Length: 568
Image (tube, rainbow, N blue to C red):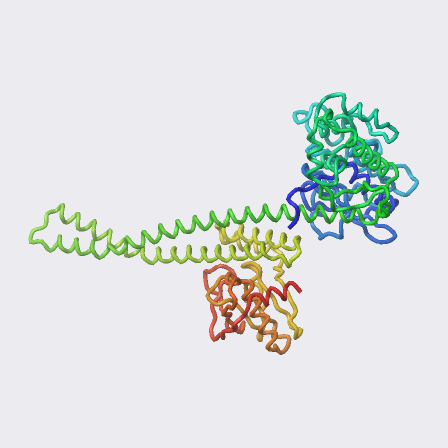
């Protein structure tokens, strides 16, 4: 599991990434841009070695500039992406500038290397004040990630057409490697406060993470030292702290960085060991940090989306169960129709019934008739709510499976969860059938999990209701075999035996996978139905992926074997 705490990209990390990117990207030609998330842009730059992708993010909790692997095509049609695509077309990146200890990066672009800069892409990494702006040759804002109006900031409102103004200067002074130990110590001790606060107030560029790294290599010792008052720190502790301070500044001045995932923080980009032979290694820092942030952000999104889906499924289940109970109560009331009929008959069988008695008998007849007519309607409603409960139960199983699928890449699991979320919107929330059909027409074809058997045949596994429907009824061909855990919610598994002769090992693997992708995967052995897809039939009025079958046979499967095959 990824660490719960995400380390923010501080000055040291930014300087390390820029030092690497300058040697790799200058110059490079802008080629494409996309916006996969509201506060994130991905730029493709062409170099002599190929296309390099950078990720610019002004997200408040995680602003960053990193290199990333080639991403999926997503978000190229956003307004901001189109504006950048038009404004940077056929331009070359010729400059990556960052001044002092500011976390502001300016990417200068010109028509050709050596010509004056015509466009500047500015990334401001300042927590909740982070932003991204595109400037013209006169430093006027062409477009930006978010407008800052006067009612949001009296210090620095900025919008399209304004002349760009740099952020207010940081508090504290710039750190200097020539400052002596005594002078440095005296500056930190001017105010009797905690060491953590003194470092961040007296000097620029000291993030909470960097303060930990400067204090000690052990997280507990580092926190203990930072909580001490500057007047309580011993001479030996000051000397050790100053040694690390000097080493950090030396790494910044010489652009000498290395990435390590140890110490008191999740990662660090400078080496506190002056004799280390790896301190000059700068290969792959930006790409490794890109993978680090993507892994953690995907984990956060995965956990949050899973919680939202669990909450929605629980609420949907409760609503359907309440509606089912209500319809069942009304159906039970209809059983008294015969008693109303008998009461009315007994009233009219009296020798001389009065007018009031006749009127009362007529009311009882009408009530009994109304109850009898409502029986088929109530039974139809009961079936409707029962089918929706089956859909919800299946969705809960799909969600449990995705959360437990440690064999699958985190990004792929997030995609599958979003598909399940979209499916819930269409199946459980949409009330209009026409709207559901329109949504399905606009959707991309489902992409079920596909595996290859030892015999060379393809196995398709549905990971949601729409994928189940797709592989079992729409894409199935004569000769294909359908597998499903018996009397248990689970995924549909289709062995494409229409492409070749299925051997026993292929059949057993398909059965094992059907057992693994079911609610019964905790059992040692699971009965699995094997049915030719030509014997499947859609149930009219039921949800997608709901089928009935005839002439099937039972295979005994082991879910653990299916899990092991997925992990290999």
